[in-house]
Image (cartoon, rainbow, N blue to C red; front, side):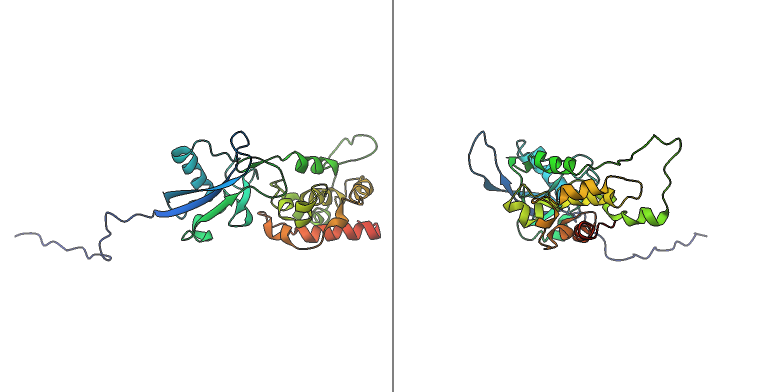
Length: 256
């Protein structure tokens, strides 16, 4: 007697062996090489890529397979180091956090260097003015008296006061989105003010007044025009404009 066999029902139509997640995307990159041309120019690269990949992956593909001279910064590739900030479709973003599918891949995707800082080559800018402003606001804990024999205690409430501004990764996305900074690179910029805020409102720090005087300069906090570009550009979700307003209020009231 033969053993009956059961036919397995199909869960749906058979998938085509030719199915692929890849699509054709054109990337329009702003190129600049001072050793070859004095002016920047746009160059298109059309590649096949999974739309769930990131813009950084596309830049890698272009550099490794199309044009090895393409120059850009990146390090951790996970939104922590902040080194790959650039203008993507006219907005400051981190290339490692921007998915291709989220920025309309049916049209050419434009990628260019962030604004307000001197372009050295392609997507790489001179970050020294940005970091100098950061250093100028004394981004470190300052205390007086003898070194303590145990840790400096701080309540959860005091820590919460400046929690938001501890998230800054110094990517310069906020500062290079600021119209005031575009027009005058002497302005400290949002990132420097955010990092000053982080220590001004730290209950353990004793240099708040000194930092406020630094930011009271003509190129300091009063140059902010509250356009909210910086808050919109921050990849970490920091309420940058709010932090700047709190520093302004501290300058007026001397309470922090």
